[in-house]
Length: 538
Image (tube, rainbow, N blue to C red; front, side):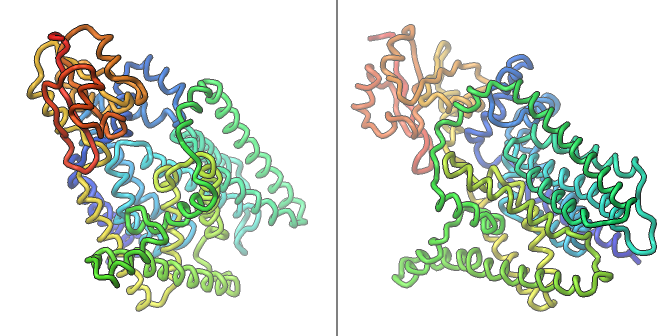
């Protein structure tokens, strides 16, 4: 018969298998959009240019270095590029179980692993060639390393009755070394994830504050050694961070984000508060969406399916979160009355709450003046939310727990269907590239506006060798064409370009040359327009 730990391992393995199937299915169905194409472009540079590019980047260098090694081995197809994120997302599942089993309970760890495996938000970013899944994995490993050191520290300061305090320097040193390494890797993966280190330090401060009342000389000495070793670890992390900042071109990194406008306090707070609903439903949801859908339903506007979806994602999911939170609080109260029966590590829930709330507080503060998409940049807190939610669900009686799981399962199923149905992400350049590749002649060139969109177009034209010239969004395409040698030019116009909405006559006037061919190549309502001009006959 399989024991408790063995049964847990089998369940987690089953969740991994389900997650692999969901994530690999349709992995390359959607187009490679701007951010993903930028990942490919940076990772495709020679090492010298790659390093120079990363010096002016506001994001950490680790993902791009690893992606370059990855594509050198597996190629640069959309499937291969996204498979790296899939691998990180799969590794996240057993890591969530391990953290849950350590800080909460094995049952909470298993349930949280299931939620991570089935979350449509996790699915979306697992199928995106960006650093967010890697950041989530490294963040969780950082918390695991800290929790390991924390456990040793608690055992040495406040040992279980009848046991000898763990005072060996080696048993305390190695967990702290692993935490230090993980924290440095986290900062090099994505700087905003450094907000997790603030949460960790806050928890360490609480531990020190609670242990300062010990009057036993030996215990006080152990507390001092632990505090000194912790401060030394933070000093090492800080020193490495300063060296990294010296490596960066801070002006360039800051200017690359100047386009981000502030959301203001209300909208920034709303974005952070809606993250749990995104984790369950896999889409952006706003507090008013449900009421709009309800009003549409009353006025018979054919919104019944949308109403049911939002009913599950918003009110019912909120009810599950509230009920699970109440159950977790009640369970904590019972544990305080019977501390000997407590299976979880002391303060585990507090640590997870800090790890969830503190980064989201920073998300709000940053987004007030420079908007950051919370679901994207702070995706790494979702495992902590699921762990806390799982802890509350485990504390519920069986019947309410099953109902709550049914609501969460329905929300995740709806979100997964929606995620799988989206075959285009932002501007889709596949049909544009196919048209150019089919009809191009030797000596043709491509000009695209705005300039930043050349990355996805270059990705889909990489096999043709056709040069792609980017021009700024506010530049005159006609003037740019006139400055080029005579020849055939495919003018690709993204919906962000001021030329996109012009009539064919207005477009020809703006380009200062007649159109040989003109069409829209995107199947979506906004996307890509293409015009072929020939300046040899002017």
